[in-house]
Image (cartoon, rainbow, N blue to C red; front, side, top):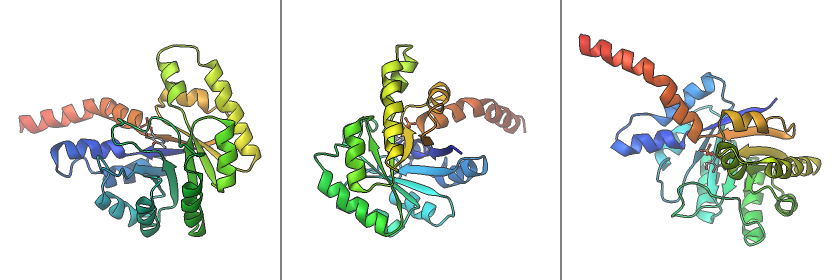
Length: 238
Ligand code: PXP
């Protein structure tokens, strides 16, 4: 069975725009699970631009299967060990980026990432590395002892959205997924996905989990608009 992880970072982005409590990421995380999501993903960024430490604390108190994305730093590792989520995904992080723009540089940070993964593995937290679809990074992931890799799907998602030829990128992802699976690494996919990209990528049988954020939250706003307008109109009439 393929699983869906819902990234709720942008619920926090909306909440933070007004500095209040609405919309509440914890309430929406619970709803997402009730509606069939298998897990909730949050990225606790070092600049705390969306999800913050209180969100992490509150989510950790629930029974929601939590996938915590963190930068590869000892400070973030300590936070992860303290909050003890079910899953951790290590991601590259740059302050000036709008979103996570690519996979980890595993050759450059090999020792540090291996150390962090080892600490998390010892605590029985499932570990995942966010990587570009490359054989080299899968070999590194195996050497690092990560339980999973999450393949960055930003490039293929952009090609599909722009109606460009995506067959080379799809082939690359397919081969990498197969290779990782043959080494006993569970394969996930994430970034930039929408209905169409998910449909295309879910044909790759080795991909077991999809982590989707921006599109789901954006689409939920569009789909939910009519319901909210009707409710507000009723309030105006009273
Ligand atoms: N997976 C990882 C590791 C991410 O960092 C992100 C957010 O950048 C996502 C999945 C979700 O991406 P999106 O919001 O584009 O669906």
